[in-house]
Image (cartoon, helix red, strand yellow):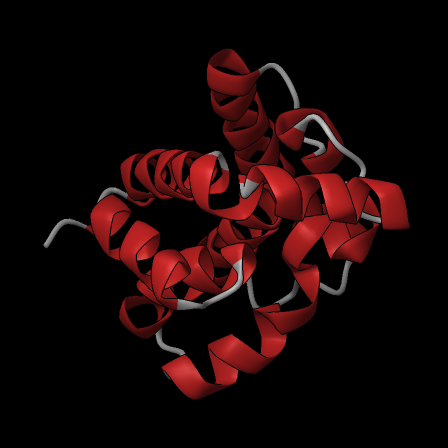
Length: 145
């Protein structure tokens, strides 16, 4: 199974969007899946506030793991990796016009009304899998794997 399909299947099976993307690539980047699951667990649903999509943050975690230098605690060294975030954002925005969960889903899941509407429309299962698959596809291309 290819990586984007694997990420989508993980999401459908119950992984959070952030977990589905990050764990699909974590082992090949040197991190075991159990650790990757824990690290990425709280980024789903735009960090539960409808902000940056969890599929996006999962991809950023993988890009950081791959491209951040050992000296990434130093601002100038960390700047090397910022271009990867910008490239990812650009490619994701070409496909979806937003990075925000609330924009992508069309509801703000951080509110009781938005969460209820999301559940009523089954958005988690009807629209989110495409964001996970697309994020993983872009990430796969950027990781050259």
